[in-house]
Length: 228
Ligand SMILES: C[S@@+](CC[C@H](N)C(=O)[O-])C[C@H]1O[C@@H](n2cnc3c(N)ncnc32)[C@H](O)[C@@H]1O
Image 1 (cartoon, helix red, strand yellow):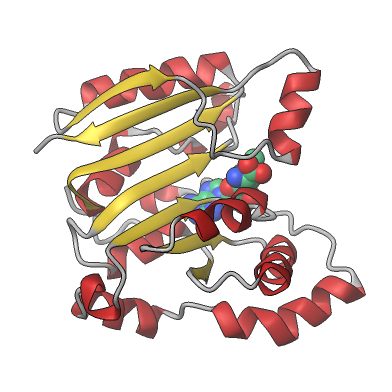
Image 2 (image 1 turned 60 degrees about the vertical axis):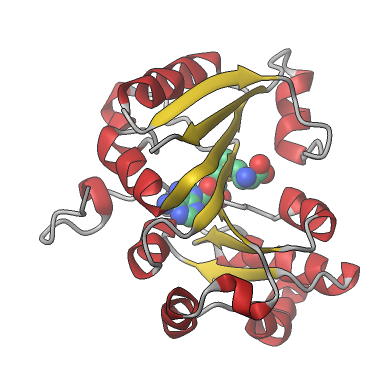
């Protein structure tokens, strides 16, 4: 599957909203001083595609779409020392927060992609990613916003293109309707086999998940494997 050349962004619209979070003075400092240390530029991503990841002493490339404040990113990456995690997020204020967490925790295997994750997938070599993870994506529940959801056939196809055979797509959501829609999209993608799985213990409970739990909406975890 290839992105239609005249279609930008993918699917004709972004999957994120236009609002930036509040850039407090602390976050602004983190953005100015810390973000550059972790930033992955399109040029870096191009060289990443040209250099097998194993040459850098890392075995796995993980892409997280929509890391938000990065609570899960910063908590999980230290337990995955063999992986390079690229955390994608267009919101500069929350990316600044993640950079602060990475610096405070001395986390060295995370890079930040500021912008649309599909722009990153477009510059990476196909079949190179060991895991794409999406924690609590915006469900865009209103029918008029359905085109912004991540699990459209076009967007899902582009994600699968980027996955190596045997690699995984992981999703957590506290929205049952969204989980059902994602499973249906996964079933309809011939290269994927997916299922609901028990909550993985190493995924931390983030502010987002805690809010869902308080509202009586426990998370559903889904894993899909690229079979061919
Ligand atoms: C509901 S928030 C969840 C954040 C985080 N994963 C968590 O669990 O706290 C969804 C995030 O995904 C980001 N997002 C949505 N589409 C994206 C895309 N195509 N590329 C990068 N980030 C995206 C949004 O900006 C938003 O911050």
